[in-house]
Length: 335
Image (cartoon, rainbow, N blue to C red; front, top):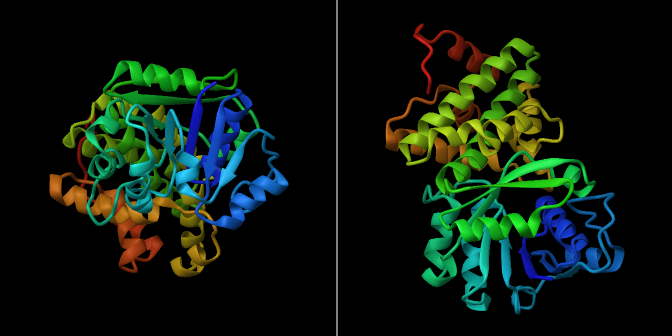
């Protein structure tokens, strides 16, 4: 039995906590909102973020970060990407030096353009970052919580750490592959959300299957181009953290990012959509970061740029599709 602290009680953090608890691990789930911790403790359900899922009796929850981290051999960070830095800075003094740090958040910090591994390197000691691992892949939280077969990847510069994460999470319905490309896996999990917003817009405009197939394919090319420019392996984007997660979030009706895009395509205002959501659609913030990163690295990302325009510059969704279709003809490249 391993002592695990899961930092972040959104749908994904709750699903991972339930999985680990069912395996017999000693899990404490930290919730920012005291009422969420209370729901889990009293009702065995996270009604705010994972409604309808009965949680294991042995899963503990608290709104006190120090309590959640006390004695934890593994710390799983699952807070929204834009607050990971603040949360983990507070957590740092309570994390054991030998604890394995696993990041399961998907996003890029908008203000600094840092990936989650870079964010944590700023707030954690080097010893705490030894063996840092990122967990990503096509995985809707509610399906994992229901035991539906799922496959993800655990990537780390340390093979031992990746194998430890694999052993920790692997079950008969949750298959974990290992990898070493932390940058690629981080970027795959973040960038696909921006393309999924575009896929939702296309669906909202009733563009059809042809459009979706083109958008997913060319969106993957954009992800790969930026990833390679930032030091990732091109092959990572053909795997679970790239194509796998992109396919899921662009086609699955459970995707928050696709849902936001769909409603934008239907003509709703972004503020209205976000105001009605309790969970975070990471792609909305990530779109600005991707816009800035593409400019920094000189990478052409026309789909991401049109999504950025819709979100921040008032570009009409229908016009965004026209802009993409009317670009100068060119060869299809491998990237």
